[in-house]
Every structure is written in C-alpha cells, then in structure tokens.
Amino acid sequence: MTELEKRQDQLLKKLDNLYDRIKTISSYCNVSNVKDVKISKSNKACLPIPQEVVLITSPDSLPWYLNVILKQSSEPINISWHIHSSVPNDKVAKIKNFVNNLPKSENSNINLRLIFKCVLADTELKLSSLAVPIIGNVNILRYLSFAYPNVVPYNPDDHQVDYLLDLCHLLERTPEKNKEAIINKLCAQNKDWLYGNEYSIVDLAAYNVIKQWKNIPKSVPKAWFDKLCS
Image 1 (cartoon, rainbow, N blue to C red):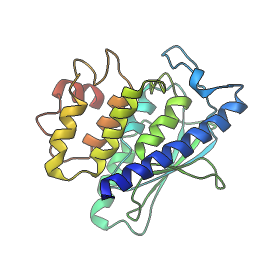
Image 2 (tube, one colour; image 1 turned 120 degrees about the horizontal axis):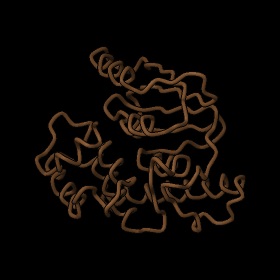
Image 3 (cartoon, rainbow, N blue to C red; image 1 turned 90 degrees about the vertical axis):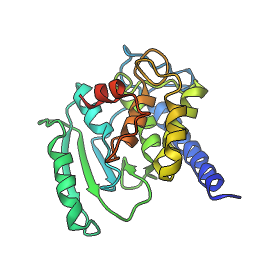
Image 4 (cartoon, rainbow, N blue to C red; image 1 turned 90 degrees about the horizontal axis):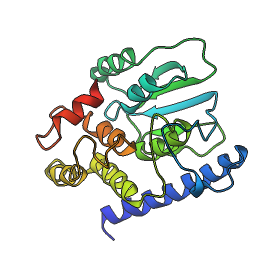
C-alpha cells in the first residue's frame, strides 16, 4: 500500500469517528438522523457550541478560516492564545500578526484557546478534556458547519462536496510539483465560487490551504481569493 493510500485510509477512519460524534451530539439537540439535517443560510445552529474549546495548530498551518467565521458570525467568542516552546523564535512574529488580526469580542460565554505548536502533523480541535479531538482542518470545518451553518454552508448528502474537501486535505500535504494539478481540479467549476453558485465549505477549506503559501499560483482565481481575503 502506498503512502497516499495509507493517508486516505486514515482520513476515512477520522471521518467515521467524526460522523459518530456528530450523531451523539445531535441526539442532545433532538436531531434523530444526521442525514436528514438540511443546511441552509436561514437555519439556526444544529449543534451547541461548547463554552471551552481548544484549537492546537502549527504556525505553518494557521487556521485562517477562523478569521472568516468570526467576521461573519453574530456569536461573540473570547480568544486567548499560547505559544509552545517547540515554536522557533523566527515564527513568533507570524503568530502574533495572525492573532492580532482576528476579530475581537468581549463578554462571551464561549472561550477559544489557541495553542501554537511545531510537533503536530494535523490541527486538533478539543471540545473537552475527555473527548477524542477532531483532527485535521477539513474535519474541523465539517464540525463547525453544524455549529455555524449560516457561516459554513455544508450539505453532508452531496458527495461531490466531500470529494472536493478530500482534495483540499490532499492539497495540504502534496509536494510542490503536484499542487497545480489538484488546484485545477478544485477550480474546474469555478465561476464566482468553487462549487455551485454559492459560497460553501469548499471555498473556506481551499482558501485555508492556499492562504498558507507565500506564492499564490496563477491557477488560483484571483477574484475568488480576494473575496475571501476581504
């Protein structure tokens, strides 16, 4: 089995774990069947937002989707942050710049703690000290789509969306020489947005990967990227 196939198997297992967790949390919200949940811009949050959340990430894979979500959400969030000793000094300024540009809010019941470490393969979202963390930016966005359906539109019944999200996951790890091919697949249907006629979780997942790069390839639609940066 190739390294890529092993990574894909690991991703599928993570998705299965995430789906089981969503079904459990949904039962507390009187949602009898996750597949029956329809995400639309007018829906209220399907899942409760925990009061204490920890996001552990690398300075080389900053959660740029937080900036977009916090700008669009009406739910205030208190943010604190910590830089782990594994982070070299030359990356500290980059982290501080990222945190300082996040939308600020006060008097919220929701507390998000950001921990920046250089020892993780994937970003982790911890909803409690006892729960298994949600691993990987794409999986975290899937969870956030159920907590913020108006901000992260996602239809879990659309297999094409999941295919594009898998491409975003692969794009995070692919060598430089293979990035162009994946970007072309992601942008194959691009008009205003990457999939369909409306903004969706796919746009946010792709943007989060591309925003990490110093040099943006010409194959990335500039108008699309600029909209998400604004």
